[in-house]
Length: 197
Image (tube, rainbow, N blue to C red):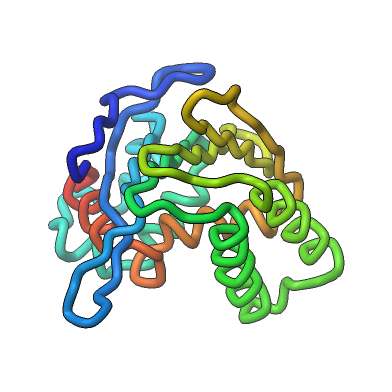
């Protein structure tokens, strides 16, 4: 993905397949600035939970948020792997995730003290890190648990891990990356729609 190698399988408890990939970018003064590449790994069994959309074209799926809601809700293991293209301070990334998650939760009227605390802990986890090019952040979502494990891999350092235990926050992180038309990376959503169709 954008010259960054992504293995076709990612194994935690079982092998997950690379079913979508893309980048996040922004145009600044007519220049395309790329921030990170994204690989979406899903248990191939997810197809069984999406039968209702069988036969739909990639273009149709791309525009159907209920398709992506079903993908997010499917009780199968998922992993999202981000590899940094443009270096960024952990504190900056922490603020991005905090803002994105908080705004979505507030819009759904699910932003309470517990969610605020959970987000503060995530921000704290990223705070002291520095993401050079090729650093990786992996979100792992087990099949039947409302938790998420975040694994940060920095060059020359041991991986650091953090578990998010607030179900609403976990759900919203999934929506940020996988939520159809409202997701952070349109290229990733388009790739998922193409591969799943």
